[in-house]
Every structure is written in C-alpha cells, then in structure tokens.
Image (cartoon, rainbow, N blue to C red):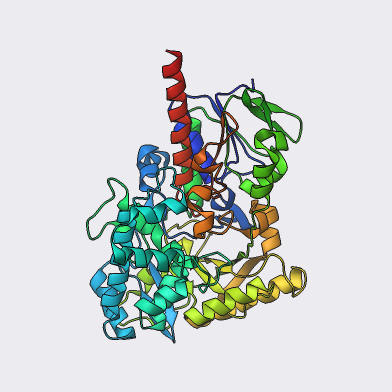
Length: 535
C-alpha cells in the first residue's frame, strides 16, 4: 500500500508544487508532512479563534508558470491585482508604488530632483546585467565563479563587482541621492534576512527580478507584472495567501497524489543502489526509488540523513549552515480600519489600504535594526511588511471586523535580552503596534483581539527553523550553484534517486513555487533518460 513512484518529504507550497507536477505526469506520488496541516507558512493557521490566514504576506510573487501549467484557476485560485502595490511612509508622507511609472517618477523626483532618472537607470542597468549573466530562475544555476566570465562589457564588470562583492549601501549611495529611494530598494533587497545593507553581496537581492526578466519568454510589455519597478506582482490571492495552498492541495488530489499529514519523517532510507524511501516517527515506511526532500536542508542533513548517504563531509557542511532567523508575527483584529496618515490628495484610501504596507524609513535605520538583532537585541524600530487581507478576501472574519497581518523582522531567535516569554513577546508586539500607528493613527484603540507570535513559537508552530523564512541567508555565496551545497545544487544529489527542493534550493525563499517546479522538471528529465536507456 505504501509503494510509490515518488515520495515528497514536506508539504509546504514547494513540496505540493513538485507533487502536483509529478502527479500530473501520471506518477504515483505521496506527500508526507509532519504538521497536521499542509502549506507550512503559506498554509492556513488559526492565529485567532475562528480566524485563519497564512503567515506569509507576499504581495504576489507566485510564478505565473505554476499558476498556468497546473491550471490553479480550475482549482479555485483567484487574484486581485492591487494598484498601488505598496505603501511606505517617510516623514509623515506616504510613497505609493503605482503601476503607472509616471506616478512613481513624480514621487521620486519630489524626494530629490532627478531621482526618477537615477532610479530608472539603476533598474535598467541591473536588468542589462541580468541579461548578460544569462541566469535563469527556472533552471539549475551556474556556479558563482562562472558568472563574471560571461561578461565582456567593462561597465557591467564594474556593476557586477558592486552588486556581488560590494554592499547594498555602497551601491545605493553611489547611484541614488534621497534616503527615501534608498530605503525603498533596501527593504526590497533584504526583506527578512539578518544581513545589514553594509554586508558585502547584500545587493544581490535586487537581481532576482532581472534574472526573471532575462528568462526565455518573459513578458516585455511596460505594464507586465514582472516589470513593476518596486515589486512584481502576480496578485493578492482571494482567501489570503493560504488560498494558494488550498488550490495546490486540490490539484494534487485531482492527480491522485496521496497527502499524509501528522507524519514526521525521521529517516531517509537508502542502500547500495540509492534511495529506498522514508520512515516516519511511528515506524511506517513509504518505499520509493525516488524521494524529494522539500524541508529545510539543515534539518534534512542533520536529522534525516546519515553519513553513509552522501558522505560525512557534505552532511556536516550543510547541517552547519547558519539560520539566523528573526521573524515575529503580529495579527490584529480591528473593529474598523484607521485612515492612513500622509496619503497624497489624489489617492483613493480604500485602494491604498488593499495593498502591502512597509515600515522602514531610512537606510541607516535599517542598518541599525539589523545590526542590533545580530547582537541579540530586538529593534526599537522594527521593520515590517503587512497586509489587510480582509479587504481582498471578505469572509475571513464574521461581521465587519478586519484582520491586519504583519510580519516584523529582526526580533532575533537567539536573544540576549532574555527568553521569549509572554511578557517579552507582548512588549515587542506592542512596540510594533506603536510603529504601525505612525501610518495608521488610532490603531491601538481599534484592536478587539490580537496575536503576537515570537520566533521560538514560529519555529514550533509553523516548522520554520529558527524562524528563518528563507531557509538560510540569500547572499551570493549561499546562492547559485552553492545552494544548499555545491554537491547538492541543481536539485539532484549524489544519492541516486534523491532530490532536494524548497526555499533552501535555487532560487531561494519566498512564495514563488519555482524551486518545486524546477525539482519536478529534474525528476521527469531523469525518468525520461532512464526510459530511453531501457528502450
């Protein structure tokens, strides 16, 4: 009964994407998930009684190819394409990331004369560099050392050095004038990582969209989602981010994928011929000649594999990868929504409240916040990304209340300020609400219920090791052909029939589904080659 063509360990969104593609190809597939619910941080979670939504707050990074190829619309997935896509406050005035570049440019020039041209030239230069490097998010990546050799233009060599070897601070200080424009790109490049913008290689996060644009068939029209300067957006899922997982689960069931929850895998089985399957905590075995791991590589190599699988060297190096997590969750239920302070006169307040908001007003403040967290101290000015999902997903609460879902960063998992007990968790959560009140005056008076979740709780409840949403830093040395290890890059491993996927593989974290799609492609290619040899 437990013999399958492929077993997928981990039912997060990437594991489900892999399983859906393989099931669609006619393979008998099982997904084995340790938690009682599928989806990991992208799946539904009851942060408040009767109020379920996802931990993730992406404004829409799901790979459009995954949506189209798996026909997720047929499984109920719908998107609202927000415009503007983001709001961020500076000195009491709001910047809005409109899809109309002219409206964005007027705001940039208000920060500093000529800033729009400087901003656009930086974005264009990064796009040209991405095209010349010929790196695809949809294929196994090259080694970092190979990239510079692909360049012939001296100016691109200089930009490569600035992005891959210099710091984000250095790049932005050289190219832009205003603190506001620098902060916009800094929050985009760094997001959840405990990496200060002064760190060498910290600008590489700005290359993800250029790499996507350089892929074959990427849309080139001026209003294509991938070309939005501040944030490419597939859209906000109706039903919150967990609607993505609901659609993937339904797609898997349509293709007869077995979905087993509440079954922690404790060991990957293997022998002289390669992988043989997995065994769960209860001793139940799922046998297969092909196994895909979609869990954090540190957990995989430290806890589920032994030295004989691929050798003690690879195992020790991957298991020793630092996580350095710092995510903190704030969910507020409010009886009414406060007005945003500092909106331009031509902005529709309802449209603005439906998009993502970000909190982090200066490059120096971002540097200080992250540096303090690296020393084990929670920031006094937490950086935050948030959504009001009830505006695009009515029905998440009964009546007329709304949910405000916030991901705060740089609340260190390993704290020097004392354990993450109830008092400290409450104190930091209320500090987040205070900072949010700069954008949303009177917010605290409207809260009827709340949930603050500290990094240790996030690890325990959602399965995120050390509360790190990207399964490790996303710096140049941790990306490309080194993610999660040079011998385990490209989704294949030295253990025959064993594959790796998820945020710990190329192209890294966030809710794209791309690692899952790429892993499924590798499995199907190998199956095809085997069948041709046998024929």
